[in-house]
Every structure is written in C-alpha cells, then in structure tokens.
Length: 114
Image 1 (cartoon, helix red, strand yellow):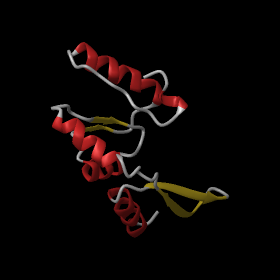
Image 2 (cartoon, rainbow, N blue to C red; image 1 turned 120 degrees about the horizontal axis):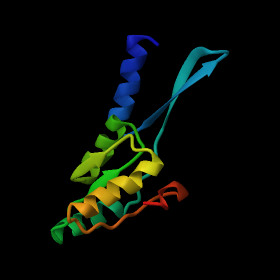
Image 3 (tube, rainbow, N blue to C red; image 1 turned 90 degrees about the vertical axis):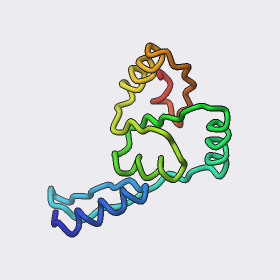
Image 4 (tube, helix red, strand yellow; image 1 turned 90 degrees about the horizontal axis):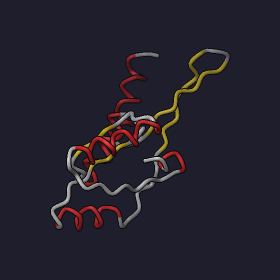
C-alpha cells in the first residue's frame, strides 16, 4: 500500500481504532477501521482502583498503537499489546510469580484461560 494510506491507517490506530486491510483477488482494495465502545463506567472504575493504590495493566491482542491510545485515554498504567489469547495466561502467571496480586477482567471466551 502507499505511504499515504499506511500513514492514514497509523493515524486511526493512534486514535484507538483497529484497522482491517481488505483485498480483492489478492489486490489491496482498501481498509476499514473499527472500534470497541468503552463502557461509560470504565474510566471511573480505573480512577477508583488507582485511589486504592492499585496499578492497571492492559494485556490485549490489539495492535500496539491502538492499545496505547486506549490506555492513555483511560489512564491505564501499562500495556502489553499484540498478545495471543494463549499467551495471556503466561503474562498473568508472570505477574503473580513476581509477587503481584492479580485480578483479570476479559471480554471474551478467549480470555477464559487467563
């Protein structure tokens, strides 16, 4: 794809949107941007957790730029992006082994093992 289209896709990611590239007959045809709506209560919940002295880590399969944009908008402390569903459990396990108390909230069946 052209540098201009690549730049546009990056800008969308930096706004917290996922970008899906579309091909027709193996030729680039365009891209779509999608976003998961964030619940209105999420920012307040994170603020209250911070007041309790807790740190928030987002472990997601999303693109790095998209994940960082969402984390910044919600004041999330750290981001692990591009994590495959089967690797989320290992990330949680590593945090526990480092002595952290961990609570996990997921948004799909692929998060169940973690």
